[in-house]
Amino acid sequence: MAVIYKTTMTPSKLELLAAWLPRQPWYIGTASEPHLTKAGGFRLDDPQGEVGIEFMVVTDNSGERPRSYHVPLSYRGAPLDGADRALIGTSEHGVLGRRWVYDGTHDPVLVAQLLDLLQGRAEPQAQSETDTPAPSVTSYFTGVGFSTVIASTAVEDRQHGTAIAVETKEEAGPPSQPAGAVTIDVTRVLRSDPQAAHSPATRGARGHVVADWRAKNGDESRGLFVVLRDTVR
Image 1: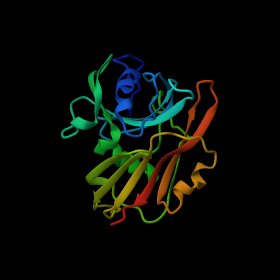
Image 2 (image 1 turned 120 degrees about the horizontal axis):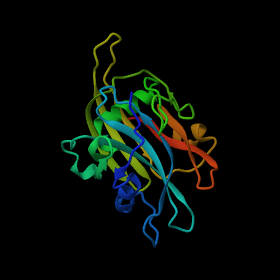
Image 3 (image 1 turned 180 degrees about the vertical axis):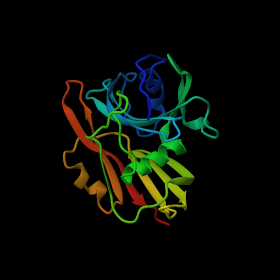
Image 4 (image 1 turned 45 degrees about the horizontal axis):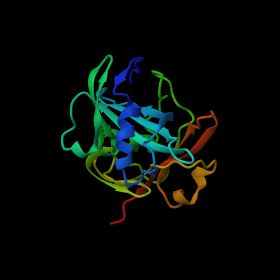
């Protein structure tokens, strides 16, 4: 169970993201520096209790109209080997000390827990409260389940999102889980769609995650965060 501390981070998450977002290919640039506000999200627990896992929504208010971005984040107490290009920055946590903050699409612990969420084996947690489920986050999965023991990942940032090609290893039981080869499409620029679970983007998919976020005026939005597909070989 992840413990949510009521403390500070210096620099803050929003400050780190304001510097990082404009360098991403899916960011819709404006004439001004990003002006970010926190707009929602949820968390997952690392079973080992070592890595913080957050699926954060931030809204950029610097353009003619606000745009909301989905940024999976992982928080570590030491650098993640081989993930220098995924490092968003470091921050001093008021309780835990220095934390290395990563684009979580490159973190195998986050990816494994996301696969568990998609298959109904992990419960989404509230973003800012300890041991509190987030019932508005819903997942769907079809077909035969598979292992979430990561063998390899390959991450590709694209104009409209991020694709994570994942290979998993067979997991001994009971019950045993076969290896899998899937691609996780992570939505980056969120679009409100009350019918997101039945949108063309989910057609033929193995699974998906739908969640809420809120506008600056407090209005609730709901849309696709993640789509899971079999990897085409």
